[in-house]
Image (cartoon, rainbow, N blue to C red; front, side, top):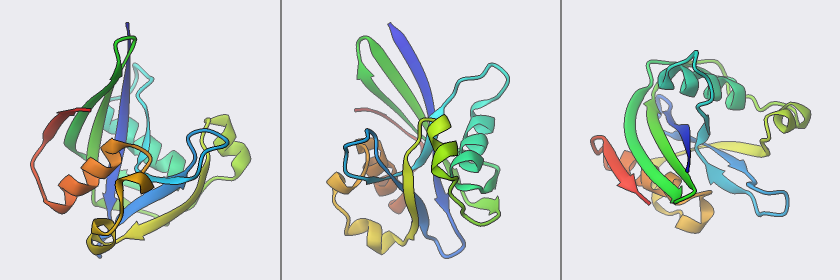
Length: 152
């Protein structure tokens, strides 16, 4: 049995807008909206350090004080995944995506980003998001819920 630990971030700006990235999971897929996320793959960092690193790598922001908001358990019997979703509303910098070559070295395919208002998010359909955890994280963010643990 394999267990993969992942982190993701719901990044919110001063206008109360959420940052989402548009990416493809596989080369032939249609791009979908996703949270900034990545794999916890180091014994030399905490989960908080990992989400700060992923935010810097994927969108160029320097995040401060991420707060754990949700935990998701998904996957199958041979590959369990545990995702820790953090809320981030303190950061410096401007959003900037890496060139394709650098993204490819990290096995990423991010084509765009956008800041979404709560109203815009509420009008979106589940199919527009990369995964159920994105939809659920944004729904819970809109409802200002406490920490949730969800098996999907």
